[in-house]
Length: 400
Image (cartoon, rainbow, N blue to C red; front, side, top):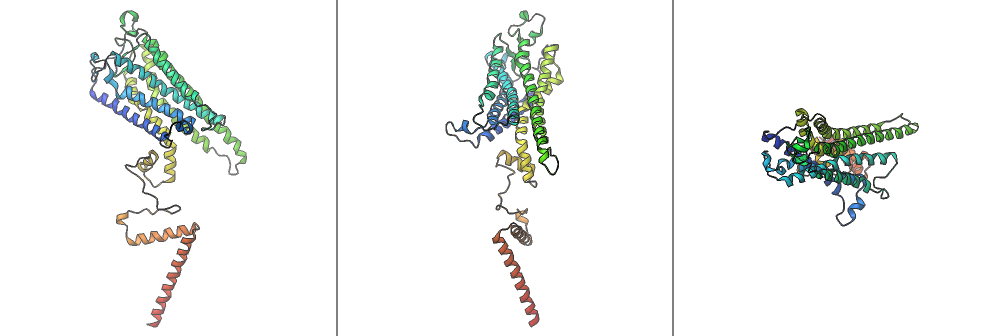
């Protein structure tokens, strides 16, 4: 039967809300990164946003909403008569939390699958990500509409109730009554919540994981086939660079989904099949499910962070991360002195005049090798001045 968590301490609630807040921030960074360069005038957004960016926005909205209503709000929407710490809601707020939880969780999981399919079609069929002839609505609206259907279905039969955990979800009332031999007699609400949990909660997530995995595997295979075709034109031998990059990115993508959702699936199927609560899987689910937004942000920004680190290997990870996230509050890189100039790494306040002089000579020689006529002339004049100075010294010594 369902376990009563009303005696759990406040640290668990703080933990859940903190991780939910971090997930919301991470999802917000994805939305901000996509929309920051788009025009704000009416109609311009849809003209400039690409197919994958459209799906990513919907996916991030799902992550943000799930983290907010399930983890961050948590017990605040639970009916106050449940005697749970922080429960100040009512039955109506409980139903609303269950509905929104199902909707945003489904939207996140299904959008992950939709994004994987879109990338697979772009690679295998040669689609252009910003090709206007490819309608983005099926990839965006399909997860949205399915999520609406999945969230509405449990409303029939009053299946949204307090689940004896830290929020309201698909459950019977009192919690656990749906697992009784005759739930029609023991349940006040949600007598069919057990089957509804399987249909509206577990199966859609499992199907999304399957579609995502198959799409990523097909994408990696398509990249491998393309590189094999290019082997005959490669003088330096075959290269599998793009295949390996696609493989690693695909594994990160699958891994982010698996870490976030597999514990929830394990917990849910264990509860559905055995009608018991497995504590290790429950606490694992509490720990990792709020991180779905963080993990998706990690997969999204990872290639850009790697490229930033390759361009500026001397910068700290903090500087590179702030550069990728477009944050100027800390760890920012100093502005470059000029294009084509090798930067001098100094400590500004503690640099001596001799070090500065050596640095200036090095900068001048570097520009001269680059073919800059001004700096080449400067180098020649500098050498001529040194020769003239040497001749004058010789004359002084001779005259003395």
